[in-house]
Image (cartoon, rainbow, N blue to C red; front, side, top):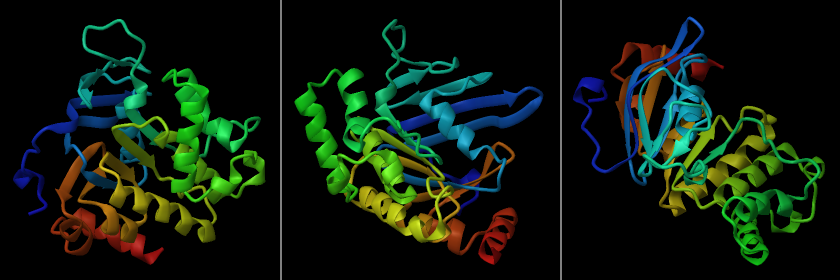
Length: 263
C-alpha cells in the first residue's frame, strides 16, 4: 500500500527528519515532517507548486533555518541555523561537502572556466592538491560528457551543458547524498533530455543516496526506488513508482497526476 500508515520504517537511514516545522513568517511551509531515506535509495519527491518540496532539500543541505524538529544526514546533525552543518558537539566548520545539491539555476561562476568551476571547491574546501582536484574535474566531466569543454566559459555553453557542469561540480565533492531541485525547469524543452540522461546514468551507476524534486513523471518512474507525494508541507503518499505514479490509491495524487499529464 502507498498509504503512509502502512509505510515500513527504513533501516540505517542516510537522511532522517523528525517533526520538522518550517515557517516563512506566519505561513507554515513544512508541517511536522517525518522522513527517513535509506542509504543508496533513489527517491523522487513530487507534488504541486508551493507544497514545500524545494524547502525540504534546502533544509537537508543546511541552507534554511527551521523552528522545530531535527535533521540528521550521513551521520551528522544539521543545526537549525542556516548553513548549520556541524558534527554533534563540534566547533568545526560546517560539513557541507557530505551533501551535494544541484539547483534549478546553474549558478556557475561566469569568470571561471568549466574546469575551474569544478576544481574550486575540492581545492579550497576539501584541501585537495591542484593535481587531485584536476583529476576529479576530468573524471566527472567525462561522466557528464563534457571533457571537450574543460577550457570553455559558462557563457559559451548551452543551458543543458551548464547544468551538466553543475552536476559534475557537485559530484566532484564526492558527496554521500545528492539533491536535485527541478534541475530541468530552467531549460528549453529540447535540452531537458540530455540532463535527465546524465542523472539517469548517475542513479544507475552510483551508490549514493539521491533525493530528486521533479515534475518529469516518466523520469521519476524510471530511476526512483520510491516516490513521495507532498502537499501543504506534509508527505501524503509514499510508495514505489508503481504505487504512486501508475496506480495511485490516493485521490489527491490521482488529481495531481491527471493535471500533469494534461499539460
